[in-house]
Amino acid sequence: MPPTDPLDDLLHVLVLRADEGLCPEAVVLAQGRLHTPTPRPTGMPRRSTGGRPFRNALRVARASAGSLAHAEGFVLRGREVVHHARCVDTRGAVMDPTWPEEDGLAYAGVTLAGERVEAVRRRTGTRTAFPGVLDAHTQHTRDADRILTHGIPPTALLPAGW
Image (tube, rainbow, N blue to C red; front, side, top):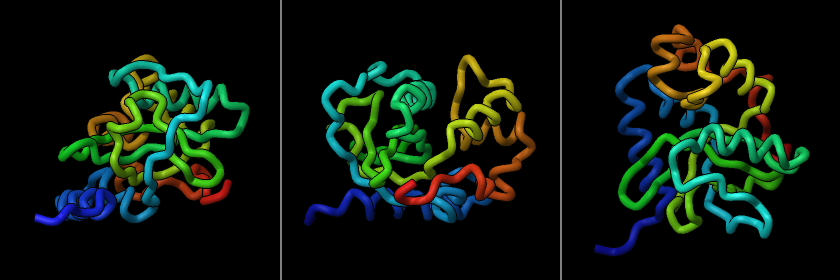
């Protein structure tokens, strides 16, 4: 079997999952962008080997003095599509502060204004164990499906080349 493009593989899985109704995958398909991974710049901290990607990406973005933003969505890791967060620079290049570079083959997601991510954390009571803005469980139980029903508010999205 010929090799496939990781971005195509990721999109295929997201489209299949989005057919199931209110879900983060549908939000990403409607409002997100595709990204290919970029090597982590020298000096960019790697926060851990995997346990808290949402918190890690938010912390690194905050510490970057405006050169990186928090992005959330999905990543193709091997053959598995995983809900994940990472940092994105103003050119749209993805830098993952949680996983080794070779783990993320393709990314799809939304780039979010940091203050809006913080607002969701406060509103949903997920400050210490933050599972992400698009976390389906948080949306269904704590946030009344706001984002899954209406999408990310335009004021919370950072455009390409922010």
